[in-house]
Each structure stands twice: as structure tokens, then as C-alpha cells.
Image (cartoon, rainbow, N blue to C red; front, side, top):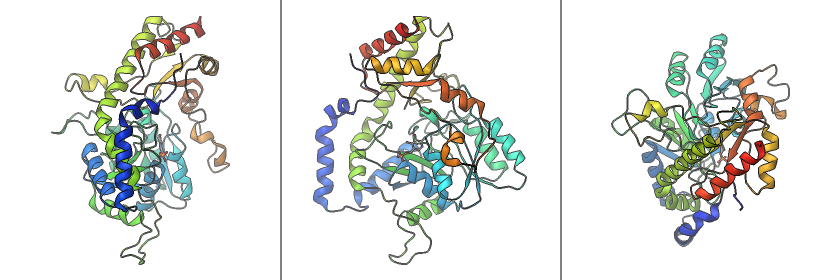
Length: 393
Ligand SMILES: *Cc1c(COP(=O)(O)O)cnc(C)c1O
């Protein structure tokens, strides 16, 4: 049996006709820049994430970059973030001449640890830190209550990197009328990626910034079009960060499936949890299951809360590199997100030195992601677990 890490062919079986119709619609419309598909998709994502405005952009990376640009982050500024994320989170800081400051992660969630953030903010007597970027890693929100409290105390904007967490709920003490707030709705900016492997993936690159703030949305709209208003009159320097209408049209085909896909991923995660517990590997401490850290908080009040959307199902394991090789040899797709923590990346050179984030370093050495995509079958999951058992025996 072959189990790929992600199988887009499996969803193409039921999406192909609609995707082709959507692309054809754009082709025939001749509206190739901005236009109704982009505008409708922006409204749909804003509504879905419980925000007032959606501004479509070229990618998740550009969603982060344009947000920092709109906040005026520039050379010499410090930006507080996590050392354990995809490179883009740090890359956008560096591209603006700013310097990342790393607060280590909480080992149970892999997300930035507010206690470490507080230490760094307290130590920042010159107030060089100008923004905070928490990442909702693998599909589960960072501890936003504590993060927002720190942001308020230190008067800092929060840019949520919600690239892996669209639709993930954050069960704050008080649920709003429409349910718990969602990833991306709590900071000044929520950044989504529609890279094909995200829970909502396009047929190419795409991204969006959502916000509750009208002025901020207007700044983003200006900046994504070279800062031009009116045309050829440039108030500020932006860039070409416009969302392609072909991507918007394709994503509008997929959005109605998103809740179902979240549900299927959560079901698959529950099944892995169950299968792996039965093997005894969890009790023996060789495998640590992913933890939905807010499950208990949301459970009693709202059984359908999506506190984890499982963009990735990530285990901590013994002998990770050998296991990875073994699974690969057995035609099972797996991946390490991420093998090198951000503060250890070569491109930093001497810019960031002497940083210690032992939890991020430990995570980089011990984690492994298993296939979790919605169409994964129970038989495939059983096969994956069987091979893991064989490896440890
Ligand atoms: C995917 C991802 C991004 C970047 O998104 P792109 O659309 O690929 O540019 C940024 N941050 C995180 C955490 C991601 O997973």
C-alpha cells in the first residue's frame, strides 16, 4: 500500500468539473486583475473568519509582508515571534530590515509561550520591539488571551500568522454570539495562505489578510497596488501583491467544503490517536500524541468547536530520523515541520546570535508529521500505524 503525505488527486475526483468551470468563467470574463471573483472571495473569507474586511494578496508570505509594511515596520525594528514555524514568518521581518526576537515555544502545543514573551518584553527597556507575530502552528491557535494582554500592556500590534489555521477556533472565556472567535480575527491582521497543502488550498499561490480595522484594510488595499491612489499617484511605496482572480474563483469552489474537510481531518486525528494508544507505544513514551490544548475548555460548551483543524498531525517520537527513513522506504509520506528552528537558520549570520530556544530545538529533532488529509482511509491509517509498530519492535 502507498500512503502519500497529501493526495490532491483524491479531491480532484469530485472537484475537477467545478474547478474547470470556475477557471473558464474567469478566462471568458477577461477580468484578469482584481474584479468580482476576488471581491466575492474576500467577502466570503471575511465572513468565514468573523472579520469585517478581507484583502486578497498573492500568497501567505505576502499577507505577512504587507501587514508589517502597513504597520510601518522597518530597518532596526524588532519583531517578537516564535522560533518554530515555516521560514516565511521570519523571512518577512528580515526583508524589511527588521530583526526577529524569539520567544521559545510551549512544548505541549508547539506554539509561542506567553511566559517567554513576557520576559523578552520586560527586558526590552529601549522599546525596540514594534510588533508581535504569533503563529497558529499545525492548525491550533496560540494562546491569544495571554498574547493580547501582553500586546495591550506594551501597546504592540499583533499580526497573526494563521496560514495553517483558517477556521480554527480560540475558546476564550466568553464565547461571542456567533461562537468562539476564529484564527485571524483577534489581531490587527490575520494572515492566511492558500498554498495547495493548506486546509483551504488554491490551484497555485494565494493569500489573504483579514482585519476588523477599516483604516488598516484601506492601507492594505493601497499597498497591494504599489501604493497608488489614484492610479499613477503614489502616496506610499507598496508592491504588486494582488490576488489572481483565477485563484479566487478556484478557492470559491473549495470554500463550501472546508468545514467538512476540517471535520474529516479531526476524525483522522482521533483515529490515529486511538490506533497509536492501542499499540502501547504511547504508554511506553516512544510516541507522544499531538495535544488539542483547548479541547477541554471548549468541550462542555460547544461540542462542535474546531479548536484544532489539523493542517498537520504531528507526533513526537524516539529515533525520529530513522523512523522517517523507515516510513519512506515503506511508501508512507511523512515530513518534518521543521528540522531547523528559525534562530538556527544559516541566513541569519551574525544578525541573531546567542539565542537559546531549547524547546524549539527539541521539537525540531523529535517531531514527525503523518498523512492526515481528508480523503485518507481507515485502512491507510491502520497501515501507517502497523509500520510504526514494526519499526519500534
Ligand atoms: C504556508 C505558510 C506560510 C506562507 O504561505 P505561502 O502562501 O506559502 O506564502 C507562512 N507561515 C506559515 C506558518 C505557513 O505554514
